Length: 112
Image (tube, rainbow, N blue to C red):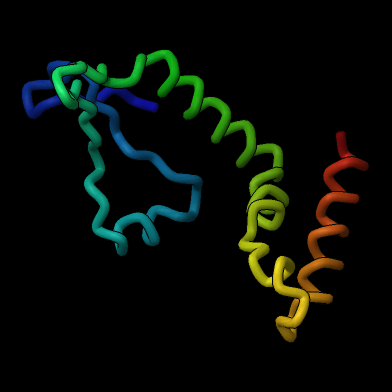
């Protein structure tokens, strides 16, 4: 993830440029999300919560790139899809959702 800069090309502390997977730029623009995020320390009940360590932000960005480039993103999206319908087995789609979740788990274990 690129560090954020101001108009004079100076690095802004705890600022990062938002990036997205190739081909999703239009979707990101449509959400009107700011293209730059700035983290700040926060004081809650007298306790200071610091901005995230830049190394963690960089690690997250690297992991996201690996997941995207390896083709694992879609599998993870399926894996973490809402499974509330499974919990209520009387829901009309419960059996389908359960079998779908089991297939995803099987795929995940086969590729591990």
